[in-house]
Image (cartoon, rainbow, N blue to C red; front, top):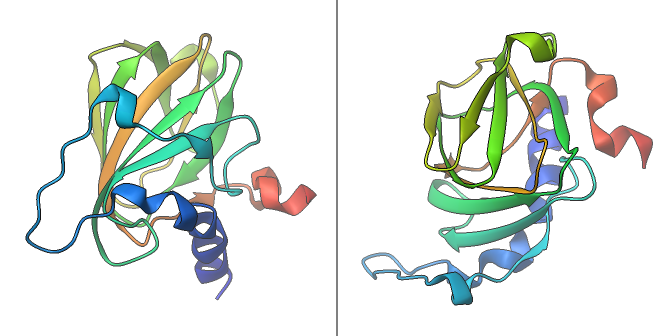
Length: 156
């Protein structure tokens, strides 16, 4: 039940951003000027922006979303309920694996890099510069923090 609540709360923030959600059987094309940024879901630390490019993260099915984060941004160790396929569009993502945010063990992934994580794999990310990543996965989207105290919704 708690995990379901985290998923629901996390995706509620994305509901209004699904302007590019496509109808079944339709195609979608998005140019950089078409990307409409809005606040990221509350399950993420404050300061990030998100844009849904395709699909609806609150529903079953494929979706693509971009996340823009400022320099100094970090997401504590967490897991996702489905495969996550991520491309670094600009900037650099520092990705570390495991349940502890050991920055010395993270790998710097510059623009053009790609990574894919299976469901339930604990990882963390941090950013030393403004960065945009594109996440492709299936909904409903959610995050489960390894340490529940890291969930930004706990401090609200």
